[in-house]
Image (cartoon, rainbow, N blue to C red; front, side, top):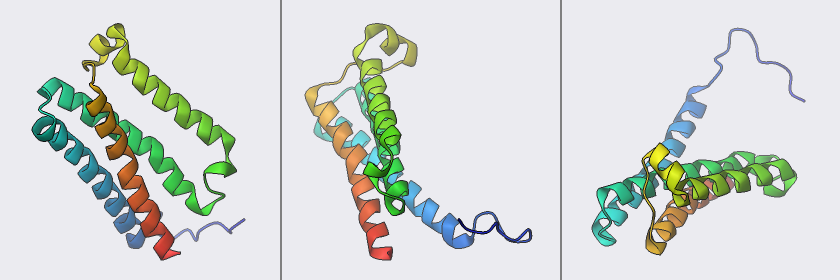
Length: 137
């Protein structure tokens, strides 16, 4: 519904680049915090902690789609997004649960505490980003 951008303008403005960098830093901080919690608080092995970090990164990115959609109808605006997100989460969980895929992706089984850490580290950055975007609006 908007006219095309002028040929001489930047594809990404500096304001947009800064906003994307902030979003990346929030997600990265959450994923690194998940690694620290897995190793230091939960005393998981490095293999399990890496798996927690990997799953947290996937969950955070799947949730990030809803932050991006915030201004265009929200999560309920596109049922295919919900299906894709649920499918992505299901595939990630199966990847960790099935022995054949664990070996293929070099991940290990997680404890309940490990999965809880994944969930928190996947949700918290998106709640933070959602709140930041809500304040900007």
